[in-house]
Length: 171
Image (cartoon, rainbow, N blue to C red; front, side, top):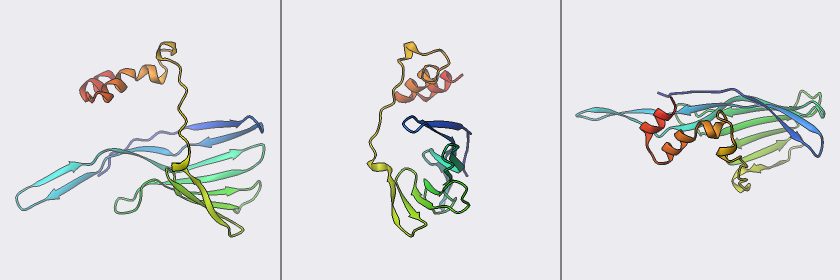
């Protein structure tokens, strides 16, 4: 058994050096928790696993200036077996129906590219990318309904592992 939630977003990324604007959709985000039922000779019990976040669904990236676009699928883990965090993608040149590059792998690991020329390469290895710290305004400089300010009490209580206080802070 799985418990789920999801959200839907659209964004725009601008490459200032090239004056290109990329419109993108995001995959769904699912909060998962599996229920395992164990039976023994004397009794039956259930154990909920540690919750995790999983990305799933289709999204796209397109640039109106260049005409390049990509279709991306975030694959959710099958109920039995399979891997988490799988991704496949196809990248298209302007006005082409056939992709010039296909990508597959793990969105939080290594992705491999296969080009229409037959060349196979590592597309990206996210584990080797540097982590860039977010730049966020100080809490006292934020408006009341900005995310960090709004959720500060919940975040604090989760950090100190006070679930009841974190739950109360959400209301």
